Length: 421
Image 1 (cartoon, rainbow, N blue to C red):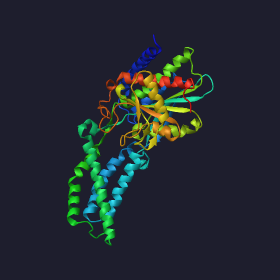
Image 2 (cartoon, rainbow, N blue to C red):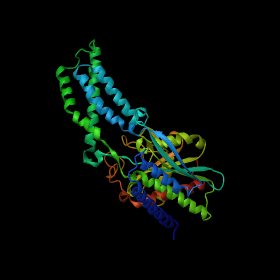
Image 3 (tube, rainbow, N blue to C red):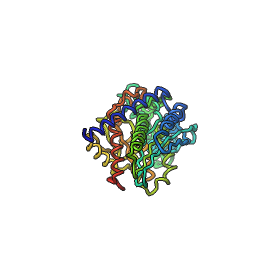
Image 4 (cartoon, one colour):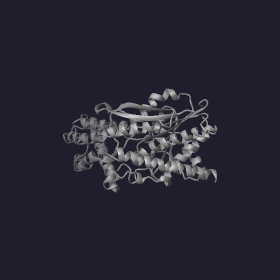
């Protein structure tokens, strides 16, 4: 039997086991919003099993403010009518300041994932889990396989008439920017005319703009229910990746027991918490451990949303394009995929599609990519993404098999010093 065929059979077995564990954990704990008992219990279960396969298994707690990440949406909804009232009162400067504040919060909190409003939201405890498999000899490379075990909040706009998603978001946010433009033009015009309270736009134009913004308020108000308080089952996004991390650890442990230990490659498998709250878990992990990785060959192979093998790709940028990932690592992963007969490509992240945990690794200087296996754009996401239908049967077992096979092959190439910094 050929080597590639053996590798695929091995990958298939690991994939089935990863899916079975995913089913079991969801049956036991259900949805896992960060800070919930279910999420902590899932972390405990992952840690308990990981201890069987690694030289060291660790749980690390961290604090975060889960409500902040999507909190900007309701802040905009509240500011819109207040700012509109000031425009009706012909006080455009106040409206401009309020509207600008909302835009600033949105850009910093969501576009750039900064923790700008976090302190005003309730605090919760998150739990990261990771395990380390040490090589037999000196460490020349570190391979860090990661996923996240927390669930996303259900996005009502994806669950209810998803075909209208772009319309709902576009018109709701669009009206907010219209308000910003009107307030800015009115303020500048008033200053030019010699006073903030001087009518500077044609009265009819201004009146029409106010009427349009007033009639459009329901479209802005509807954003209030963009995200539900309920969490998804989170099978493909992203408990399967955490389960894959355990399968990778188990595989390497068995290899070691059978006399085939890694010689010079340390492997860390990690399951982060708080990814769906703005990458807070991976941020806590990489911030804490950055000194441990300094001046080393460290490669972060992050996995997120591995639903469909036919859509497998590697991200080369992250957090709405604001963070560069490793093109070199992505190219290497694509080449490995092709050598095994898998379709794969690399691409930058689409704007307004968020971010992944690889961004936090890249920020501290590590080589990092995220493997995804689903259409990734504002129009083409998997139909179960961030919905109650994100169940194990939505995951293509072939996507799991290929992901694990690529990761194992990458480790083998590190061992052979075929990939070096």
